[in-house]
Length: 132
Image 1 (cartoon, one colour):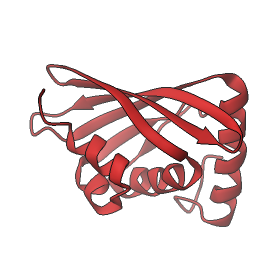
Image 2 (image 1 turned 180 degrees about the horizontal axis):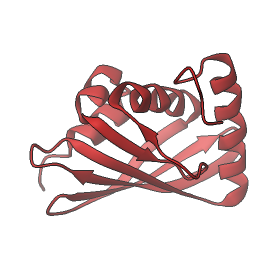
Image 3 (image 1 turned 90 degrees about the vertical axis):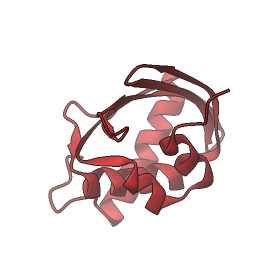
């Protein structure tokens, strides 16, 4: 079995510095909640910091790699709701994450996740002009 992508290792260990290092400087995060993405390594790292804080019992179940694409299937709890999802990573030539697209289900868990993220963003926005 090949070595897990560093993004996976960082997320599983909640190593925020390693997580930031896996991202390309101009990375784009496509959220399951928002129409437009988050751009820039610092902004995306800040958003992922909030995500890590909201998810409980987070774990990756599968990792599929095809060329420059990595698909990571995960489960987590948000309060009393079990959430499952996919992190779709598009890598650059150096193996850094150029684009991260997140898919999640079911809707009730996604709504709970959205509520918790809004609360966190209101207290500590990832940018001066938060898109929420």
